[in-house]
Image (cartoon, rainbow, N blue to C red; front, side, top):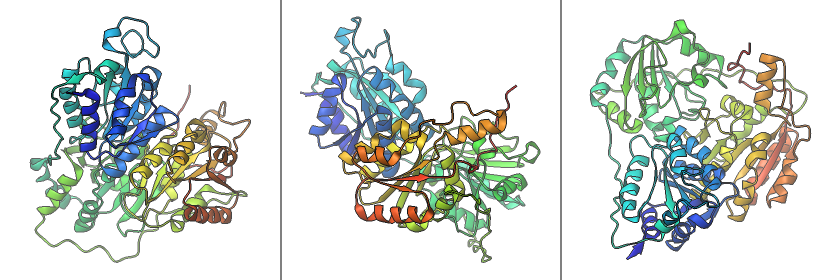
Length: 543
């Protein structure tokens, strides 16, 4: 006889999970201690949402299941933001929350997770693909099997189980857990309709979204583009799907993009969309009269397919990599050689500012890092500067969420990725607003020797909100920090090595030093407050 907590921990170990993230408390204690007993390393966070982001970073880095947990009540509600972020990014994360014992239902309880106060099983439903309260131990195996099959299925994403204390400790004579085996899901009939559409198109265009990186389909993207000599642009979240200097790459489009890529968007008669929802962040500069005649959209989630543009739409569902491999395997003629003309100069000049320009830092930063690094970029104006300026050399090494756009997510994701890949250089760019939200996770990194390099862009304001409000309303209420933070001193108080940089030379020196220290390092960039972010396309009008 073994407990439900035993079976849970054994299953996670059998799935190859090595690290779990969260904050412990009474109601989740039995399950967490069993995870440790079964050899999983427990990374205690400083805030539950950051632990959820760390589990997402771990899932992204490994391609395996990420695991985040919290105690009942507010511990669980703090995880919901991270769950929604994982859902928006199709990341397989198992969120586990505690619950008072089923036998005590109906009694007023501290940190209640039941329907009498904060019903976590219900609250997680819209933020995950599956959420359920496990009311009996003999139901646990069935519910865990179902949750895992969804999380690791073709349309990957987060799931949630709420485990009462007495269910975690309940003894079971047996519990059959089936480890999901990946299987290709192909849209064969629709795949066979793609080649004629490409052949009849005069100006085809590949729009690469973040789904390319989620599916690890970078080689397939290149093969497709080079086989037909089709130009490629990237969405804000798809940045890094292809190397920045590839001859067929024409830069990012939309918010943070370049005018050249938006021009191509308005001139194409066929979009081949790889792993993108085509959100407002991507097509904000597409004119209504310039929608393409045809759209081929690879997306495992049908929610928005065929509903955004007026184009005739061919939907390819299932795994992006598997579908592209099948399509490329049907090609009989030898691929068309990549054009040998020089790459298109899709960039625009750097701004001329009296103080440090973030654009100038990002323009040179990739040359200061090794090829094998991953850059996690937080949300805010600094994120869109990175979309526009950062020169991605290794496909898949740039991680940015422009869709759910949760401030502070990159801090936790970088920590989770470092736990998964301790030998790889992991860098996080965040802003002072994000850092004041979740910057205490620096201490999590320090205490667990997860030596991430954090770059904090400090312009002493909520820059993206300030610039957008100022342009559209003439007001900047609530966007300026009257008492700005000193990120370097804050980082030092949490045990990290810290630098401040006011010039490009100081930043370069600090980044080079950070790579030799093998310690958690924070580099505070004091940038020009008047630098205009590339976000002006997305504005609002208030009547």
